[in-house]
Image (cartoon, rainbow, N blue to C red; front, side, top):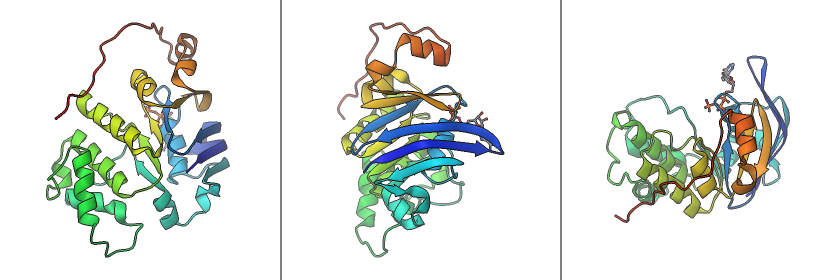
Length: 245
Ligand SMILES: Nc1ncnc2c1ncn2[C@@H]1O[C@H](COP(=O)(O)OP(=O)(O)OP(=O)(O)O)[C@@H](O)[C@H]1O
């Protein structure tokens, strides 16, 4: 699975937000998209999962223009964990997770097992009957990752997947994504985490993709100061690793 963006521009309410973005995610790659608040990361992601039509450029998944695929075909290729959580209706966690199976034929008797396995992988085993709306922010976020997992796509789009999570669960989700080995494009804010977990990253600023490549090459103090207006100093720091259960 290969995601390829060429010259993608996007407007919101007639305002140009993303300008001629080029970006590539190869099969099995974990790629981060970083940049300051409001620079257009979510907007760019939305053009990929078809919540927004680009005003110019081409977005292809395995060579096919994503905006020309049928809804079902698109959902079989690409799963999304977006920032907005779904309307808080009275769905159970099971029902929310199984929405990820909608692009597949019914009658798959093993959907229950898939659901249980996915919930287990995100640390929510046994919560199937809970009402989704009653979960905490971090639990909701992990349930939405479980929904993306049962969709069994080879491309995963994650918009700040760790924003509500404590440090242990942040690492849990990032490790999980790595282990999946699925092509992943994730908007992340923590540059240290992006550098630690991702194969490559792209830096956006003011609607443009400024740089892309391995974290060590891209995240230079010069670029960070240009993009974020902060001074970056490389120091030894506390490193967190999850303890085994
Ligand atoms: N519906 C809208 N109409 C007009 N402008 C919008 C709309 N939605 C977002 N914007 C603007 O578009 C710009 C890009 O927003 P976007 O959410 O893509 O940024 P982001 O990089 O994901 O930011 P963050 O890190 O804060 O999540 C922002 O200036 C935002 O205010």
